[in-house]
Length: 88
Image (tube, rainbow, N blue to C red):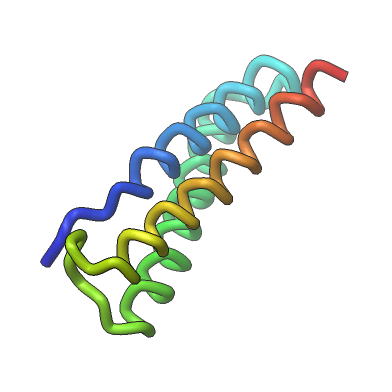
């Protein structure tokens, strides 16, 4: 076992997307929440497959730390792109 810091990034991205679906795109809350849950599940699955495929399980490992940071930065970038698109 280990600690995966990219989960926080994923939660933030899912929260932003869910809120935008309700506020900007005027989707019903139940539909936005379902989409948010599907997004979170998909991101978690992808991240889990990446981590398990390279067989690294501890935060102390440099490879795992780099992977977690890299996944987090990708998710942060996606969130920034979504936010910028909303402003335009």
